[in-house]
Length: 275
Image: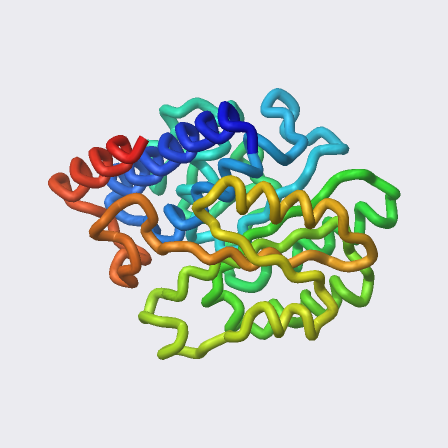
C-alpha cells in the first residue's frame, strides 16, 4: 500500500476509535470491544474501497454495507460521520431518547445505513438479498457485510451461506471478525464455530484470511476478493477485541459496557499516543 495512504488511513482509524469511546462514554452504555476490533476494516472500506456518496446516500449504484453484528453500531456511526454522512455532534447523542443514533443501526433515520440490524444472523441474510437484486438488475455494486465470530453460532448464517453459494453471488463479500470472544467469554468455551475458514469453503465460498489491524493485509485481501467470479467471498479477519485500548484488549468484559471517567481519559490517551 502507498505509504501516504496508509498513514492517512491510520489517522482516520484512530479518529474512529476515539469516536467509539466518546459515543459509548456519552451513552453510558454500548459495545466498545467489538466496535474497536473492526475500526480498521471500516476505515479501509469507507475511505479506500467502497463507492458511496455522503451527499446522495441512496444513489442506486452505491456499494452497500450491512453491519450484521449490529450491536457494534458505534464503529459504523463513527465511520459514517467521518465520511461526511452526518455531523459529528450526533455521535455524543448515541442511545439518547429522541436522538438519531440508536443502539443498533436504523436505515430509516440514519443517512448511510443500508440495513437495520441487531438480531444476529439476519444482517448477512439481508446482504444476500441485496446481492441477488444486484445480479437480477445487472448492477455493478458490491455488497459488504461484517459478522461477529460469535454470530456464526446462529443457524441463519449458514442458511444464508448456502443461499449465496447456490446463487453464485460474487458481488457479496462477508467479513468475519474473528476476535475469539463473545459476551459470555471465549468462543471455544461457549460454542465454537471453528474452523471458520473450512466451514465457509465447504459451503462453496472463496475464503481469504487477513490481519484486521494491518492495512497492507487488508488491501491485499480486498484486492483478491475483487477478482473472484461465480463465488461469494468470505474474508476471515484475525482481530483483537478492544484493539487500541490496553485494558479492553482481549477482555470479554468489555463486550458491552461503558468506561468510567478515568478509563475514558486513559482510552483516548492510548489511542492518540499510538499515532
